[in-house]
Length: 459
Ligand code: NAP
Image (cartoon, rainbow, N blue to C red; front, top):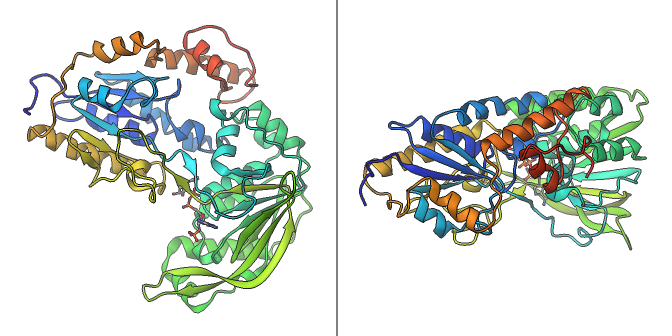
């Protein structure tokens, strides 16, 4: 092992924020590394394209920073290439001096209660991927034909789901939500969306700007029971000390005091309740809840403990929004319980690193991944300088492309993505939207090839 006399060649797997920030740090290292950024999808940006709610276009603007990174010399995008299917970790170790896995957390956690697999009970991850045009989720049979939906969880994803369900046609029209999702949401007979938090309002994971936004919806009132905002001593002390909790409590109190304006939908917040069963024969008909009391341990951690007080609320839809979970990649170590790749500051093993949610778990905002990925890359560069990287056996940049061509993989280059991007933006311009997404694999690949596609985002 010795530092190669050519530029360091690194593969980054997964082109979401962590992947792009890792690429950025590698391309600006001294001396700069060469980076091949892989993604299984023909389009980059990960959750910025497929996760961030479409009515939050400012958050999606972070993609401009990714475009700047992609413009640096030494950068290549290899879209439509799935590690594990098209190219293996062993192949990668032949072609690159180091590999950074930044594959995120691709599934949602389950509740582990009876009935959660009934039709009508969905993971928030599936719903989010569906309305954001992810090509693997366009055939999921989302049927929003229900008067009440229950969203389980009190994080920002739960608020995204509740808010998306509550948006009006006018609010959805200028977004890049798929046409199928817009149609389903506005045609749905939904009257009430209930957000269930297992702990109290002071422990809610959502952040204040996102909570405030719920109070500003054109088509939905907010209901909060003031009695549920009475805090026990430990929660009150926490809400005093924690800025987000304090601000959340202020907003919740304002919302609780506000009389309903008679808007067509209602978002109801419920605290200290957990679903114990999803009920129904053929599909979801109701959710059985248990009331929780809060108990704090010596460290001050407050946990929910079930009481024997139960209630059943009729509902035709349930969305689990209780956190994301990583999925294992064959040939890469994995911690099943945490859903992450075991690592030390991003180091997994000789020449193998990780960054983002697959490294630290599904927490933090997009910007958190910059520091996270930079930490990983600093370690990688230090290892390279110290001669600790196993030098690639076939470092020629053409080598991975040749292998993928032999295997019949249609690699989408960055130029291909730019062609696809331009086509989506042009279709959007005509309809007053930032873009109209291509939502099937076929349409995505055709647009990346420069072929004219179908004008609408219907699957
Ligand atoms: P999250 O913030 O970790 O929230 C998960 C929620 O699920 C918590 O309220 C948690 O309650 C609850 N939960 C976990 N297990 C549960 C169970 N068995 N039963 C009932 N509730 C349960 O996760 P997230 O909402 O998926 O968001 C992931 C990350 O992305 C977060 O860092 C989030 O801030 C970020 N994000 C940001 C935005 C934005 O900035 N606009 C939008 C979306 C996502 P406990 O606290 O009691 O465990």
